[in-house]
Image (cartoon, rainbow, N blue to C red; front, side):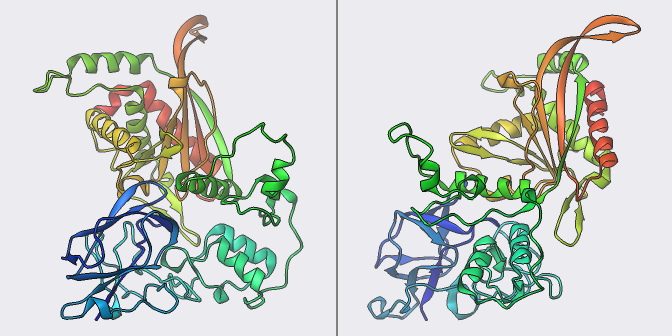
Length: 467
């Protein structure tokens, strides 16, 4: 029977993808493992492989097509013994993935749910397995409805019953657009009586007024036309949003609306760290190419210190998961890497256990591949905390927005010489300011203070990171 090729969900947050290029054409024979097409996600360009043998009978989505929803039918493969010319596309031109079995397939393998439909295993798949779009209730633990925090907030404000809303997000997760659609259509069953509107600071963004289609709503509910009205024509250039910028705008806006941030700032003396860094770099051997085997940066020490601090304060090594907290056994630290048009946050796994030289070399590799958009999803997803260092730009102090689902982020400023009082006398020391943004749902004030104090202690006594 024909094998349906669907737009795969290549990451947990992916909702749409761009079909960049077909590497096979209609009539070509394909074998399991053959690369069929290249898909552009919000973060990278990835390859889609065939999972069965046959002939590529029909290409339903031409290359260059943008914003193809996950699980939409993009091609059909004629199975063994079938006439490719007799294969017909569904009447609506699109198909959705069928429900997968309860156990998720391994991330390194492709899965074929019932009916010959081609599906793809996803990195960081939840234990309950993939849930198809269009299901009235996404299943989690028991009867729990899987929905984004913003979707839950809007549903509560509008009196919408989430169990009657079809989820189009990953694993059938109900997201903002699903709730908005249910409100517009009036198809969702009424939930609890609609509460009185909260204070303006807590109100979810209103839908944009009618006007030209915009990927991300303008601030304060203004439409694109309303924003344009503030400025003279010809005074600006309109830059369309790419997938990465759309994702950054959506996720970090949601993070500031949903995660209650609070901030803790410390000044760390780094004279001992700078001296140790210089000593270790001088002791680095050379490889066959004559270059040093490693060259440590201050950021490498920061990553290591953050990993060790999480293990010394294990209660802080956790993330929020709607109706529970997930506490981790290892320290996984994301590191913000700026690229043109956005940023990646590759994750150093088990940062507490790795040597400084290993962290340094991993970060150089991650940074190079991030700028080339060659990182794999499993390399930039997950993590408990992140490090954002703007010291190289001369920034002394700033606060950073938490990257969901992480529970904290450390903003690191530039080191500078300052006059302080030591033993009742003025002294000049090199100081670095660090600010920890905390999600108050996971970290209370005292717990956040304990975490950043552990970090400060490691930075100021860096020899402890070598043992």
